[in-house]
Image (cartoon, rainbow, N blue to C red; front, side, top):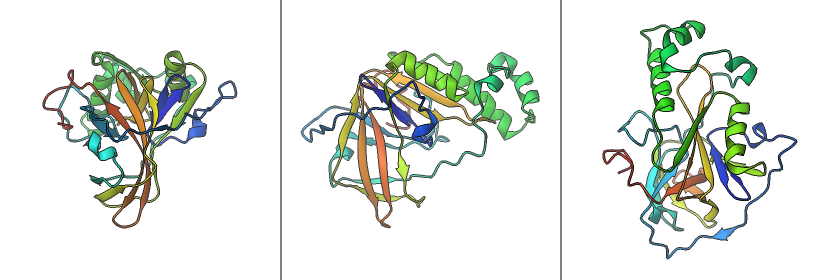
Length: 249
């Protein structure tokens, strides 16, 4: 999903817009700035999906990548849009604040959450904690939100109270296939953007990060099987700090 304010934007994977709406916060629409098809920016655009660490080569996190050329009407892209289904709970802060969330408390975490130490779930817990504790890239401000309240606090501290929330809307889950970019590509926001991605954890945790020098785009797509996707893509204009072995390259 991507969230924005009048000065920024936020994306949060798989979260309904009203989950982050608070009576004290007005959801406002963005202006429909037209996309410039003549732009030749050297960019990587990222589909909204589970987080992959920009510093590490990680094939286990299915993220979508394509060049800026993919934003043009009529472009054909090999993509896969699974429907994100949460089998774990989105817990309130009053519960998560009493559960440790740091690598040095790994044994206590596993015991509290009834996770077997040698299981795949235990590996996921350890990897998520590592990603959350790793230093961010240059220009990146990051936060792992363990509750809706935690996410809202981070978002409003960076973008203010008037935020716009969006996420990729998948009509039906389909196989990996070619999608064609339809009419209606537009810029949703520039610069002040926060993206939130679900992590592998016993309860819902979102990796949220604000990255400078980026833009968020809306892309209407149609698959070969006729399925439609209202996609959100984030264009990273400067990837010089990323690991050269990163899957996007």
